[in-house]
Amino acid sequence: MLRYLTSGESHGRCMLTIVDGIPAGLYIDKSIIDLELARRMLGYGRGLRMAIESDKVDILSGLRKDRTIGSPVSLLVKNTDHSIDKLPKVYEPRPGHADLSGILKYNLSDIRDVLERASARETVSRVAVGSLCKILLAEFGITIVSHVVAIGGVVSKAKNLTFEKIVHFSMKSPVMCADAGASGLMCKEIDKAIKTGDTLGGVFEILIHGAPPGLGSYAQWDRRIDGSLARAVMSIQAIKGVSFGAGFESAALKGSLMHDEIFHDQKKGFYRKSNNAGGIEGGMTTGEDIIIKAAMKPIATLKKPLSSVDIRTKKPVKAVVERSDTCAVPAAAVIGEAVSSIEIANSLIEKFGGDSISEMRRNYDGYLAQVKRF
Ligand code: EPS
Image 1 (cartoon, helix red, strand yellow):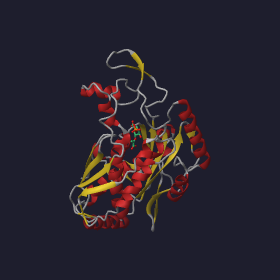
Image 2: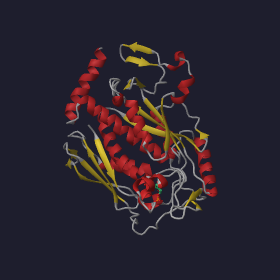
Image 3: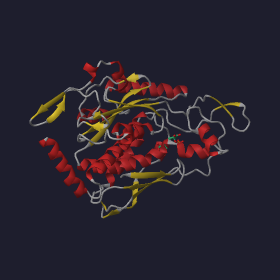
């Protein structure tokens, strides 16, 4: 079983993570983790903090000569902006943020104690773990990409793109959108929001290619892989909706149009010509691409703040204005890839025995042969 715990405040010393359950014998190229951390920092509409940080991982334990040995792996990313003890107290909660519920829950008097941990800075840790898992998944030919499909009401027209095209086109876009026209309009919307002191949300899509059929299970509710993927993606800060394949649109489709008919070919085995299921049926992977969409709300820190109440006087005030991002949808897409990688890696370890890569490989190859022979 793969587990991890993250620790660290946004302006504290560091983000620290311990990952337990990575199989022994996996070669870890640290530059792959650093590359993913760098991708998370990008995107048009991010605030000044990203110009201060240059996130790089330090692997403190769990490796010998760059190989995992079955021990827990600890990952450290330092915060350049380590200013937590100098920052002012906060008394004006932001609507949409953890501020108000956080002080009520923990009986705190300074909202900074809440916002420092509630901050999306925490996702540095999740991307670091997700990168380790991506390295593991690559061993089994499983790859994960993402792209932005909407920002501030501007929707990408790019449809049914191959993996290669998504990567190719979205890499050229400052907002990770594969439709160049929409990408330009999204940037314009972000410029407008910056001018008016507002913020923007959007939608991103994650595609997972190469997962074998049968990850997850229908046998128990908490083993359904769509459930664990949805939880992982929904737990990213500011995510308000997650769907698979045709998602909410499937509610309006007739069964005859929704379900992906089954075909068989000597070479390919069982396959489908459509993928409305988003690669998951009965809580298990089908072997088709897994397609996840997530909706991110606009960031809760507004330069033109909303009405709030001072937690000391209970008098009306404007919410606190902190340095923040205007739009972080591209970063959220990278984080979505990371948390999805963790869930797929966990189910792979569960199914194929996760003590060592060689054990997993043996079981994986045997299972694929069994599916092929079926
Ligand atoms: C965040 C506010 C901003 C973002 C931060 C999330 O930080 P700061 O208050 O330091 O300007 O930059 O995101 C990150 C630091 C990051 O690494 O993604 C918030 O309030 O959630």
